[in-house]
Image (cartoon, rainbow, N blue to C red):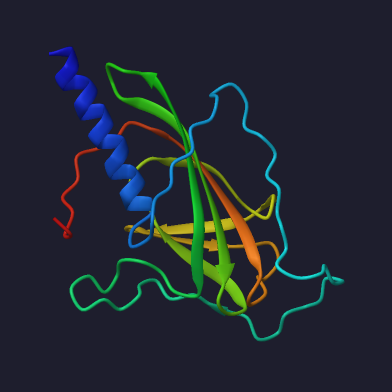
Length: 172
């Protein structure tokens, strides 16, 4: 029975990860649950003085796949994911997690979307600066403090908690 419960928790956490990371490649890096390290942002070019980006647009909320048009997101390309998940209570599957995504902007971005379903979001930052966000169904729209410049790397960190809920995916 305990093994079955552990498998349920594992598959619930896996479902959350796929909800967040839809249509991208997952690379999990285990970390110690005691402290979240500071993120290092490596610019793809020599740093320049911050300037106002006037031609920034929102990334699309889907990549237009013929079967699942609202899965994935446009305007950026993910280079790496790190998932740091701590199970607080195994009996309820309550967890606290941080997902860190390193990506490259394919255009000047005023906002971008992630696929995110369930859980309570406690904090979102882009390049270590607090970001505004809004949720509509599975779409999580993130508005960075400063627009993102085309062809430059950026790091987004999403902190969240709660227990996985049963879900019916249209992808299954």
